Amino acid sequence: PPRDSATLFFDGQRVILFGGWNGQSALDDVWAWDGQAWESLEPSARPPATARATAVYDPVRRRTLLVGGFDSLG
Image (tube, rainbow, N blue to C red; front, side, top):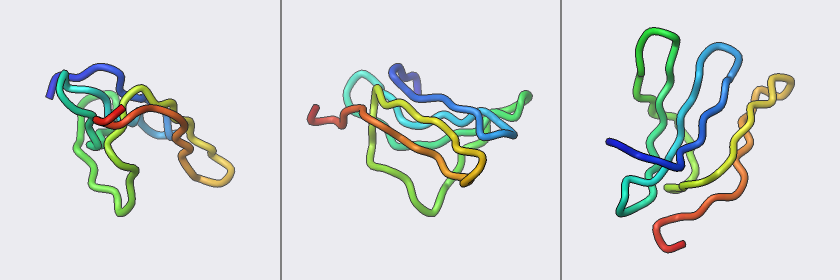
């Protein structure tokens, strides 16, 4: 859906989009852009719906760190 306040980061192979705000609630979906198309991802673990967070990929540990943001309650 249309959104703002999502977080984007590069995982070494593609751009990952997580969460954001659709005007009524925070989102928890995850998408990958490989340079040609978006693909919906279903990771085995993901944080709760979050908007205005910041994410960064750590290539040494192969982990993504998500910091801050807010949920639908604030």
